[in-house]
Amino acid sequence: MKNKNKLFIVPAVAPLVFIICTFICMSIYSGGTKFNNAAKGYTFLDNFFSDLGRTVAWSGEQNYLSSAIFCFACSFVAINLVLYFTLTMSYFHKTNSTYIYVKIGAISGIISAMHFLGVGLTPGDLLRDLHYYCVFVAFGAIIVTGACYVPVVYNNNGLDNIYGHALVVFLVATTIYFLIISFGPGLNTSEGFHFQVVSQKIIIYIMMLNMSLQAYAMYRFAKVKDKLRAKSWLQD
Image (tube, rainbow, N blue to C red; front, side, top):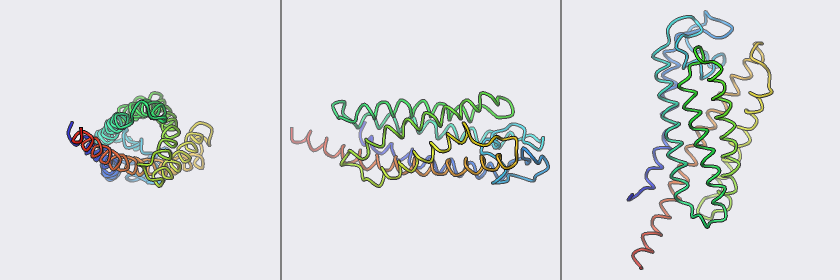
């Protein structure tokens, strides 16, 4: 496909779409938190992102519009993650020493993306166990992806180290969050609950920022690769 590198632009802007959609969801959320069903609207420090996807809010009121938009937001990001990892594999030659890391990372990333899609498709009030399973696998798989892509970025002259630094920050933050949801404070106390909510907000925004940065980095990298390929073809 001519100018295939331009497809990286879509995953680069997808996080912005997610953030806009979730802010819309927050503005129309039907209210309530786990510990206060009478709370008005969405409370940034007392509601998980997943509360936006509930068909019935903690207040007991229907939350279908917020749920539908949240499902779209998760689906849009998931589809673009699949696009990103599929494109990435096509820009690394199989003889490259880091290709195995690219392939493993991309496969793990696609698995993660499918489970992020599952997060949006499984409202916590209807399919709680499946919803939590999708969250657990999505973050676990994306850690494997980050670990694989760090050496790829640092060992490739076509990618600036600044993107590797950003990836390391993301990897560390995601690993810490994965440990928090696995072994951290439970959700049955207000202290543990608030800690989990705040942690989720931080890691989601770090993840969205990193997705944009990495997609933009690959767009620049792929653009150069395409020019070199075209030049080589013309010389032949």
